[in-house]
View 1: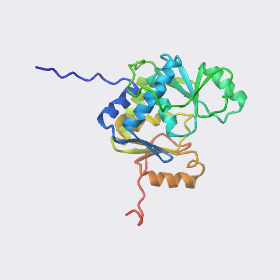
View 2: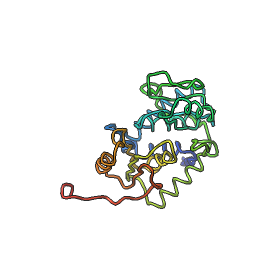
View 3: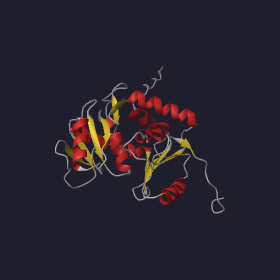
View 4: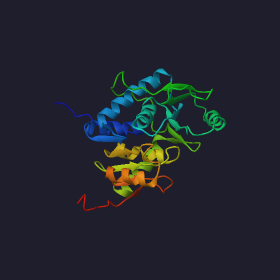
Amino acid sequence: MFLRRTPKPATTLHERFEQQVELRPRAIALQSDGVCLTYRELNEDANRMARRLVAAKVEADGLVLVAMERSYELVVTLLAVMKAGGAFVILDKTLAPAQRDAFVQASGADIVVTDTARPFPCKRVRPLRYYAASGLETNLDQRTQADRWACMIAGKVRSHEAVLQALDASSAEHRFQAGDGMFSAADFAGHAVIDLFLPLIVGGRLVVASPAEVRSVDTIDTALQAANCKMVRLPKTQPLSEVPQKTSAAHA
């Protein structure tokens, strides 16, 4: 007689995501600027990048700066940082050099993941170019815990447990569930970056507006209508809110 093993409860953000990978590997997880990744593909890319971060000596609670454009690679990197045991900090690349150096100094991070081939203009950090095309694609052993850091926002560190509590509350409040879509055009340097993980921990679909799509109200509106999502996150708005779908003769 064989006893069925009870799955270990997922206590971190990336574990909750990995659960969805097991449940719906072929479902669409992420869309951005013409790129469409399934849960399996997103997870495999994040695992490859995570192993590069582990090789770079990222430790539990170790802060990793992320200086990247809005893209699917950004989401891959945020997942990878947590899988490697670290905590991510979004670095605004538009800051003046002095402000950027001050931000880096205050964060205490010593690694930055960047999507530019140019030398990173901060002397204190070691740049790691984004590249996730090769390497092992299987999940890493757990390198962090629920009460350890997941990210730093506005100078305050957030644990995996705290972020999951906030996301679960949003999911319940807005009845956001597997199959639902969320469109994000928000500024990821602020609290909106946490919202990116809501679809990914419940089996939903995340649509990240590209830099070109966030240039104006018109381009955002066009991208939003094409995305066909239940929830949206717009620049300088209140936290997640449900948005009624527009209908027209062309789509009726």
